[in-house]
Length: 612
Image 1: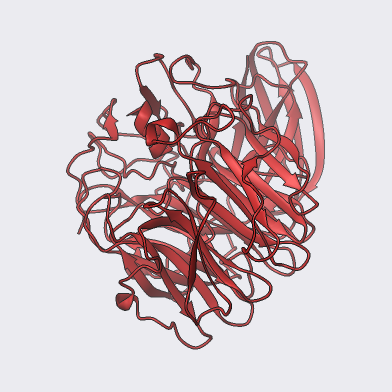
Image 2 (image 1 turned 180 degrees about the vertical axis):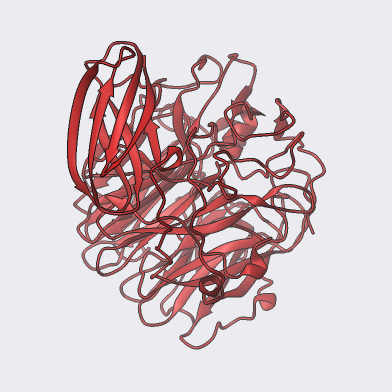
């Protein structure tokens, strides 16, 4: 059983919570600049509008989605940011999965490496307790699971001993000896993400970050921690020379944090999402199997070439939390997710940054030119219109370096329905150490991301309510089920992150969840919790209105000034039930306070808007 002693080394509380703690932008944590590069924190505040927990999956539904223990680890930091693809649905009833494993009780274990299990259509080939030895011959970490169209099974991790990437491969999935080789010796690449693609399904696309100078690396083309890309068109036998993607150079960022990026491919289309906390959120895309690339800015970070030593951020700009996810749909359109956050650097060159762990919003964007929007949050379980942690004084967050709803992982089925699994803060569930648990939630969109179902708690059973579920990775191929691997524990928080938690065995669990989900919601009137205005204040040319509709209705939005004079009205026609976003132009509005009037059928609500 873990328990909370104190926050040591990496994290220190700079603002202790007041007596009735409410999660908001005053809940701040400071970190040192050196450690921040390894910690990749969320630096954000809480959204001011919270979804109510008016529909939680029934006990029968949750019991019907059992879990299987497939392995364990005492090394509980499975990623510094984005989830790697660590589970493959092979499409023939078999499943390959992996995780980062150690059975030593320390932060720098010599036995760390890849744990592996395989479902042969009838059984898992290993009992979870029997997986004690890593696959690699040397200490490694951060494995990515791959299978080529030819049937080759591949795991790419980083080799800590030789300071480079390492590839394990075998010609037949689930059986046979693994062949091990180092990739790109001399480049000092760590924290890889990789995916298979190409017209024949045998191309491997890979991205990874170079070690920075303080980690005994070197600058690459002026970047102290550069994101490099390489590919192999023959299943990993030969590789192109690693290099930066066009536009992701020293004019884009001074450094890129490890694990703050994701990659996906479909045929000859390959896409990369980069969402570092200190630079623009961008989509890089190639339609010719990685030869030529285009760059699209999803979110324009206001401080270019951010540096703790020189860049003040008194206005706490919005940014990504570093937990990114990207998925190419059946038409090759890129869909992206990242956690909402803000950064704060109130004093330059003091080797310190601040972040707000009460951020509450998972942001979504796709190439059909939707603006980035919050599509889900941690839920208000007691319906009091705020989130309150279990302990009301001196609350300490379990440290995962992300917000209250984050760690997104996405999959898609043959019909094009998109599924997203994420980990979220549970307001009413606290551990003996008085820290709140996180559960796994799932949402889906049947219309290409236009609207989303209400969040479904897919934690396996009521007996597991007081358990911690984090780092979900979903198999991209969805059939009648979501196939998920995640880490489960009896107490929130991490031992590896110097939070003061003792080391123990964390369970690696496989979840098989029905795609039907429990999408029904109790009908409620439109209220403060079903509408959000983002961003607010607004300083750009438009504001996004996100509405949770319980049924299909006509929607109209009007803007009034403080004298109640109508400035504009826009009709959006009939919108389907679920979560949907509408954009309203604000470019003609001068600085000041306005009222937004939102009509949804016969219901109406007023929201305040501040224009800078």
